[in-house]
Structure formats: C-alpha cells, structure tokens
View (cartoon, rainbow, N blue to C red):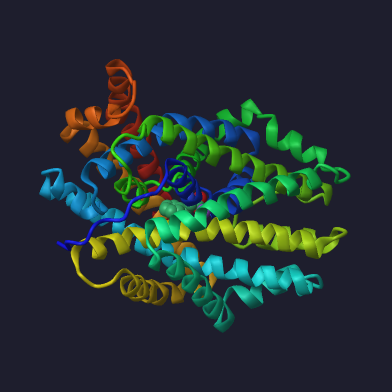
Length: 437
Ligand code: PHE
Ligand code: NA
C-alpha cells in the first residue's frame, strides 16, 4: 500500500458540490425528462420521488458510511473494515464505474459535438440526419476522446486541486444556466401544456403501469444518485471525520432532485410549445427532439449552445467521479503518480467505449447491462453488507459528528435491511427480464 498522504476535501461545501456534481449528470438533464415522457408523465415522477427518498437516500448513506470509515477506495474499504471477502462488492462497483464511464464518455462526446453544432446551426436543416452522422463513426470516436481527455485532466489534479476546484465552478454554472433556460422556456407560446403534463399525475395511468414504472423509477433513482458504482464510497473516503453524513446526504439528494425537476421545466415547455409529445425515451430521441426544437425557435443557436453547455458540465462532473473510483484504487495501492494512473486508466476506458461509438444498438446494450444488472446487483450486495454484516459499526459511523439520535439511526438501519433491498431486488428481477427479451 502506498505510503503517501491521502488527499482530502478542503471544505464541507467542496465535498457536497463534488457529490452533487457526480449526481447531476446526463441522467437528470437528458434521461430524466424522457424517462418521464416514456412512463406517462407526472405519474412517473411521483414514484421516482418516493424511490429517491425512501430507497436512494438510505442507500447513499450506506455508501457514505463505508467510505468514510474505511478512508479507502471501494475495494480496499471492505478489507480495511475487516471483511476481506466482501471486497467483491467493491470489485463489482469498480467494474461498473469502468464500464459505465466507457459509454457515458461517448455520449459526452456527442454533447461537445452538439455545442459546436448549435453555434454553427449545423443541425438546423435536419436534426435526425445530423444525429445519425455524429453519433456513430470516426467523429463520435474523436469527440469521445476529447471528452475523456477533459475528464483525465481534472482527475490528474487530485481531490482538492482537481475535482473540488472544478466542481465548485461547474455545479453553480449548471444551476444558473438551467434556471435561465427555464425562465426563457416559460415565455414560450403553448408551453404551459408541458407543465400540466409534467406536474399533474394521472393516477389511473400509474396504477395500470406500476410494474414498468417501478423498476424504471428505482433504476433512475440509483443512477441519478451515482449509487452502485463506488462513486459515493470513494468521495466519502476523502471526508473528514466530523461532517454530518445524514445532513450532507440530504443536501445532495435534495439538490440533485431540484436540478432534475428544473431540467424538466426547461424540456417540457419547449417540446409542448412545438407540439411534440415526449414519447419514447430512446437514447437518441432526446438529442434529436431537442435539437429539432432549437432549430425552430428564435434564438435557437444561443439557446442550443447554452443547453448543451449545461449538459456538458453535468456530464463532466459525473464522469470525473467515475474515473476517480478506478483511479483511487491504484493511487491507494501503487506508487505510480496520480496523473499517470489517470491517463492510463482513461485510455483503457476510452478503448472499451469505442464499440459504443459505432452504433446506438451497442451503446444501448452497454447501458442496459449497467442499468439492469450491474447497478442493482452492486447496490444490493452493499446493502446486505451494511445492513447485516457491519450493522453496529455502521450505525455508530452514521451518528459520528452529528446529534442524530440512536433511534433515528436504527430507523435508517431498518430501511437498509428491509425496504431498500426489497425495492432493489424487485427492480433487479424486473430489469433482468428486460435484458432477456
Ligand atoms: N449520476 C450521474 C447521472 O445522473 C451518473 C453517474 C452514475 C455518475 C454513477 C457517477 C456515478 O448522470
Ligand atoms: Na455531473
């Protein structure tokens, strides 16, 4: 094990913003509004919010507890806590991070391409053809490389000097730009129908489709909170002893949820003002539909640039948390310098992502494996560990540095033992069914 001093967050706000940066990503701005559209609008949001607070939040605290107590990367964390065999959970999370970043970066590359395309108006003559031309092939690979290079650049500088410093700029910029776009979207003719669709749940639709809505909502909750990939374990491992985990976790969950809802306040009025129903949440649909909308709206170039810059900042601040997961493992275990580790791993992840830059079906397959298998499985194992193996120490760790009563901590433990794994299990089984089809 390397003897060098481990880096830490400089401030509590720094940690919170980095974690919010990890959470707020393509999942919120790109996937969430379209998942909502595909799953019947506001009814989906209700289930999603319940999943975020009842399942995602306790699971996030479980990751925090493991990370902060061990002060190690997700694999060694379990060894340090005295449960060598459970490092399989960390291995699973680290593999997931590696896997997910590989195609997340391909989409990140599209986003960079769309910023340029918006500025030039390249997609104004045909949004679908444009998407087809940039999403697969040499250009997609090139911009995948550019995105990955940016991610490597940040992670190479470490926790306080790279991740903390950059997310302190990125996250407020995301909120400001998105807020501005939401105000602008509210001025669109006919956009109000979007608010209705988005904000008033149809209970009968909810009842009829609960078995498709439920796994989609729980899966989205995990993905958006960056759970199951070791990211929150890793970020918490750089945390000081006396921060309040429940308070920080709640702040992160609430901010992430607000940004997701804000993204909906941008996307839905735009779509409805042009008479487009946010139908299927296909991977390309979001890009094609939104770009198509910018092409028709006055000031579309500037708005397009602003929107895709938001998307880029969101994607970057998430991708760096994924690269940090794998980087931390080697940084903790070897004497190789952090910049070298980041470059080496980044290059390997880039290579793994190349097939996804050859076609949407491959990217969709990568995504489905992550969403339906890796994430829920990894979260489930972590919950079993924290809830049953490490329970007593986990409760103590959760309360450290807080005024949290023992009964509240035990309530959390009860959730981690029962409702949360049950929810994950149902999601996993239903999700595997999707994979099998
Ligand atoms: N939370 C990110 C999003 O919503 C995705 C992500 C998952 C990032 C896991 C890091 C770790 O897009
Ligand atoms: Na992000």
